[in-house]
Amino acid sequence: MNKKIKSLLFGGNLWYFAEGMFGPLLAIFTQRIGGDILDITSAWAVYMLVTGFLTIYIGKISDKFNKEKIMIFGYALNAFFTFTYLFVDSSLKLFVVQAGLGLAAGDSLYAKYEDKKVMA
Image 1 (cartoon, rainbow, N blue to C red):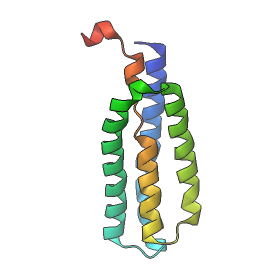
Image 2 (image 1 turned 30 degrees about the vertical axis):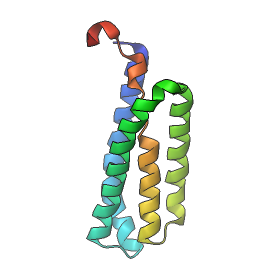
Image 3 (image 1 turned 120 degrees about the horizontal axis):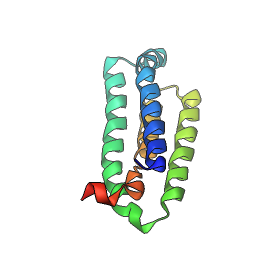
């Protein structure tokens, strides 16, 4: 397997592991800002929907742009929206942050490093 794809897969899996560990904390955080179980599940649904749709969309248009810049932009957005949790004090702001994190997660760039012989 290509060294670059291994690095991307390792980093992606590490990130998703950390994100999975964040789930219970999101529930506590949502309750502290006055949310309930519906707000928690809605915030997670917003994140998953935005991520799903944008992964497909960005995957289609990414061939027209510099993939490294897209990836750097995604990481920068992820850092920015993770930082904005500090300013969340309502469910609506939580939804906006989750949508932003979904936007940041929507860049999948594995196709650049795939082995064309294996895929055929």
